[in-house]
Image (cartoon, rainbow, N blue to C red; front, side, top):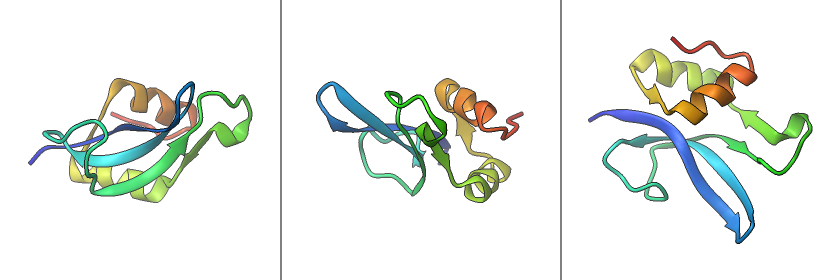
Length: 83
């Protein structure tokens, strides 16, 4: 089983927000996930737009989880280094 760290879409039409989740790579985008790792609000421009549980993300990365391109950019923006 390959685990990915990716975004799942929430919110209403034209007012999206995304959960950052650890999920089996074979599952659908908005399907069942293993663990919720944070929230991303793209419409907000302040510090609250990205909220990440850093310890849990680092643990998943150490276990071999692969972040998607967008999640990798968000993690770098928050100062979490991804190999």
